[in-house]
Image (cartoon, rainbow, N blue to C red):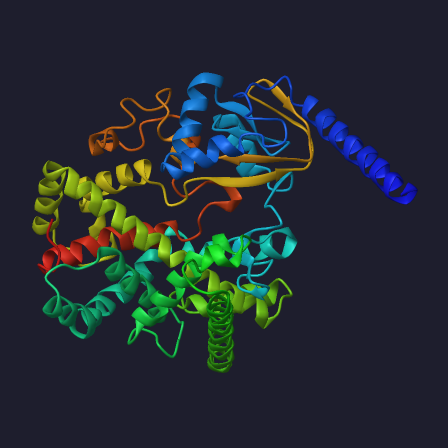
Length: 461
């Protein structure tokens, strides 16, 4: 009896001490405005959960910004989190990558303990090795190199048309745009040196696997029954193991690609071709002192980010459906403008305006997270170190301070380029050292694919 009482007393003291420590930590942020919490222990969790259930998660932050300003605090349980769309704050986040670091628990680094993109990938990595890789790979992805990459697109499109798309159209009157664009972009690495066993012949198989991973990766930290809802626990465990095996098979495929590419590179003069992405990835990882495992991480990363371009095509089509007058103007320009080279794309001025507005309304990345190491001053508030920062391009692009009628889809706002002086107010591909390396490839592809589909009469709105 005395032992039980003693345990209860010790537990109560520990719990009280823990609560006091958490409360004292929150007091470091009391000078930063923010919405009232649901409760001290739950923070804003119930509020955000309700917003998410109504598909209004980011709209909740839009409302908070309009009330409390561009820099505010909210809480995940008891822990304060800083949210900002202040341009100076965003500049600090994206320029000072040593002070604002990637969080350690990024879900796409592993799935159920099985490695996917690892710690040093060109997208989610950090440290000196990552910096070396990024510096080398930025040369491959620079805008000037697009003239070498562009000629690879046309034969790919023609091949997919004959082998995949025409049969798909023959079977169905209606085509799933996301399925179609996923197939196209899953094939794209195959013409950039990724000699995948499926490659451009079975890109839909790669697309299916990537979509499965992208559906499960964000959910892997929750109860497995929620991931595989509707299945028995035995079936859920079986599906989990099948997913792990799928990742393993994809990594084995990647290792084979690396081995074969290294063998091919032995016959070169030490200079990589301008259009061979895998060769560049191998050289970048070798220079950074990394292994073939990290090269496979980058291969997995490339396939995962291809889905972003597929989604952007889908978003673009939704806007064209809802704004038929925009579609008509864009269709006219596409039909009247012959595209024979990369530089020909410069003639598609209205099409580019439509794409830029689509990216403003629905950015490739809607929000992000960083971890602040040392204290900074943002928006006039001194922010203590050792805290989480969040930002959102979605919220930024809907802020009336920087955009007139921000909720109206209006390509004309880009008639003379990006209308704001501060580039931090428009960043669909982020900016600074962590800007999207493939943004020029994305822009070319997302313009070229609708042009190709419309001209062939495969796609109508």
